[in-house]
Amino acid sequence: MRIGLLGTGNVAKALAQGWREAGHDVLLGSRRPEERKDVGLPVAGLRETAAHAEVLVNATPGNVSVELLRSIGADAVDGTVLIDVGVGLTDDFTELSHPNSSLAELIQEAFPRTPVVKTLCTMDSTAMTAPDALEGPSTVFLSGEDAAAKRVAGALLTDLGWPESAQLDIGGIVTARGQEHFALLFMGIANGLGTHTFNIKVVAQGQGR
Ligand SMILES: NC(=O)c1ccc[n+]([C@@H]2O[C@H](COP(=O)([O-])OP(=O)(O)OC[C@H]3O[C@@H](n4cnc5c(N)ncnc54)[C@H](OP(=O)(O)O)[C@@H]3O)[C@@H](O)[C@H]2O)c1
Image: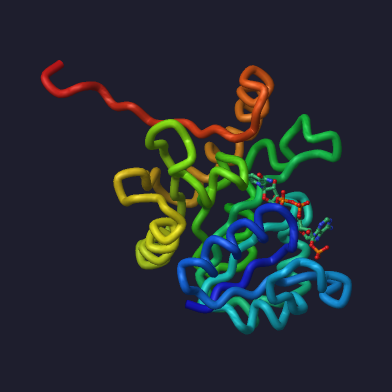
């Protein structure tokens, strides 16, 4: 599958590497591709990356993502599945930049013909592509309105090492709010543990209770 990733930072590089190893054709999208020759993965401009993509991934700072996507243009992303991994934070990383909403909802609202799936944003980039390196199975969440887009995202998660049993569809795009707001608890857990490389597992009530 042709996967375009907007951004050339930690998340975009980790996901691109993971999907490349699974056999996908990846392209990173940069504002300044000519300055990103050392990334070690194919890099192009933002619009070219969107045009390349059967699936587009937003891995840009969440407080600028909508503006950045607008600069690419709705025509370039019409009908393309958009996997949103972004989280909007204030400059000091202590507050959400969309406290009463979510980045994924804002993207879906701004681009109604682009099915948005929110996933992977509840963990660090190292865990996104190496779930097996954690001590035991953990959970990855999916939010979005479009069932077919969620199936595409789910298959790409499987390619990163997330079995179906680890994937939890939590509902429509409004549920992305919970995933993004988890960032605040994430930072507290990271503080307590002394590492960002962890994930959470949802544990249901046992049978027969
Ligand atoms: N790091 C994690 O482990 C993690 C975990 C969960 C969620 N997230 C979310 O995922 C997104 C990406 O995180 P990241 O750690 O990969 O970020 P990062 O290392 O800072 O990379 C972000 C990339 O976005 C591009 N970009 C476009 N517009 C930008 C702007 N105005 N300012 C800065 N960069 C801009 C840049 O690429 P060019 O300069 O080449 O255009 C940059 O490399 C963020 O929304 C973050 O909150 C990150």
